[in-house]
Amino acid sequence: MLARITINSARRLPRVAPTVQRFYSEDSFHKKEKAHEDQYARAHEKEQLAKIRKQIEEKKAELAKLEAAAAEHIEGKKQ
Picture 1 (tube, one colour):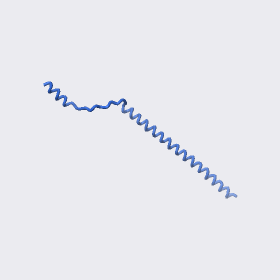
Picture 2 (cartoon, one colour):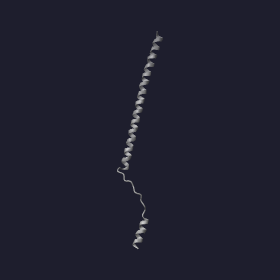
Picture 3 (tube, helix red, strand yellow):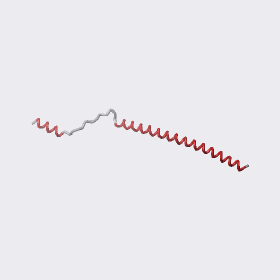
Picture 4 (cartoon, helix red, strand yellow):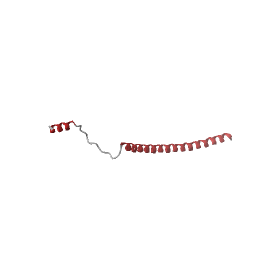
C-alpha cells in the first residue's frame, strides 16, 4: 500500500525544468545595458556636434568672403 501511495504521489508532482543560475541580477544587467546605450548616445551626439561646429565654421568663412565681396562692390560704386 505504501508503495502505491509513493508511486501515485510521484506522478502528481509537477515536472520542473532545470533553471539556469545567473551570477548577476536582472536589475544589474538592465543597468549595464542602459549604461552602454547612454554611452553610445553620448558618442553619437558628440560626433553630431563636431559635424555641426565644422559646418558653422565653413559658413562663417563663406559669410566673411561674401561680406568682403560686398564691401568691394560698395567701394567700386562710390568711386
